[in-house]
Image 1: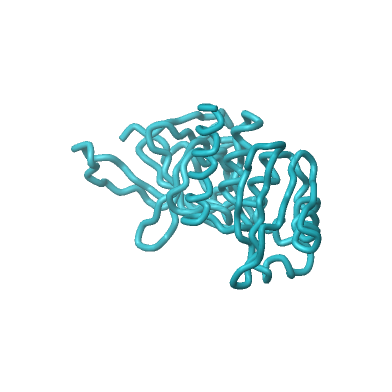
Image 2 (image 1 turned 90 degrees about the vertical axis):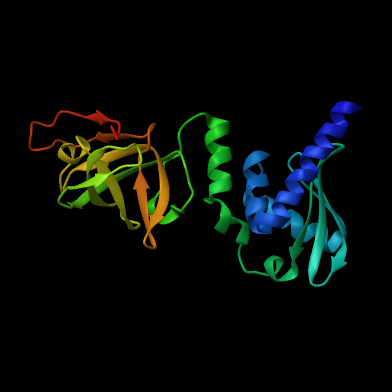
Length: 233
């Protein structure tokens, strides 16, 4: 009984977080990934439940609890356990195709997939948002600015340059510190691991922080040796 109450409390908190932060589309995409239900099958089950009150998809059962203010209230369960109860707008349900698929690459789904598979997720630059952490991506260095001396929060001076990197979906600036500056050059391709995304003067930028790494995956003019570096500032 205590375990069941704990599960209900956890799912209740997930529902509160959904109302505060996540759209119904993103949460439905998350449920599709979490419970291994095809997004098309899930969307069809929602439509069926809206018309016939009940439907099934995989291990999940979906019940329509009613309609209010242009939204359909769905109760989703796995066996006797409540998975979620959420309102979905009739406008969302009436879209052509499957709108859930538009949310399958959101950060919420990517993080769950990475945790589930235990493999790091590689992002595209177009998907990067300020505040994201543990970001991995492969990109080409387009240009590197001249280094300049800056006074860091650690109380010392360090050399800082910024590289403009691109991957076909967009461009973003990468902060380079000290020996990192000489380790990359325009035209090289780099693998960036465990970076974080911030903004500076309204622009997104990549920072490696203490745990991030930068690895050259294509030969450089200096002989093509792979370099795995961490910031020293």
